[in-house]
Image (tube, rainbow, N blue to C red; front, side, top):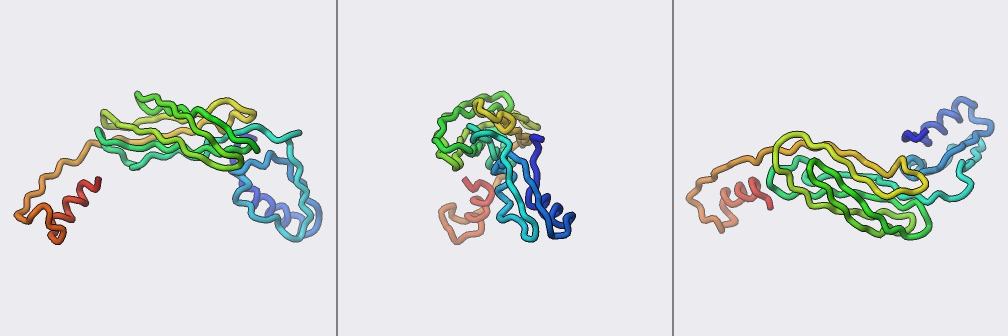
Length: 185
């Protein structure tokens, strides 16, 4: 299927079912998102790996989409970071499109062969509440991993009044530290 799997656990279960002797055939597309955690094949059984593709697929996958800060504040800048992985042997120039709430942005990035690269988007939320969106990349031989979804809650800013008789530039005062904790940027 196009769903994520756990090849290491599946192979361990197969070896256990065979009592540690026999042959296990694995038919897979060997996508890094699943097989990256499988460090070595289990001992005891012979494991034969059979790729389902006749040739290497031309594929760039969106492997991550996150927002920093995770809890954005209305009117303040946030960064959406979209990570792409190039599953091919040649560099790929990709257009990444981010649709988040009322905002739509695009970024061009070059992804090296068998490596990751990030597209960064500056986001500003105008009203409180939940916002959904998605990042998408261009078409390739495996379109099922070209979209990643996100949901965030934009919050109102916290209004704080700090009154203290300490010098605002005195880095030894408690007020100086409190002011920086409230507004770290």
